[in-house]
Amino acid sequence: MPVLTIQPSGKTIPSVEGMSILEALLAAGEPIAHKCDGKAECGSCHIFVHDGRKSLSKVQRLENEKLDTLVGIGSKSRLACQAKLGNENVTVELLGFGSGL
Ligand code: FES
Image (cartoon, rainbow, N blue to C red; front, side):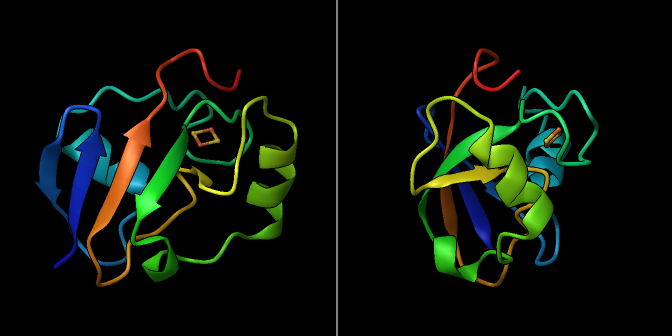
């Protein structure tokens, strides 16, 4: 069972393989923007993944295209709604409601 660690708070959430990071965060009551409800259309769920990136589902075309339109993306960027958890622990950094509009 993967554990999701949230930065900067350091909070940990036990999660389920196959769940998106967005689903795991919302299930734990973490505030994260998700304006399009997980359709890779808004970019508001942009996060940085610091550890465990390789265990996540691969970036698909839709996510890649949306990430390309966002300001401040980097090699650790993912859309929380598109990145599904694998069987390894993952550490993410929440970027706040100002990232990606
Ligand atoms: S919730 Fe809109 S892109 Fe993830």
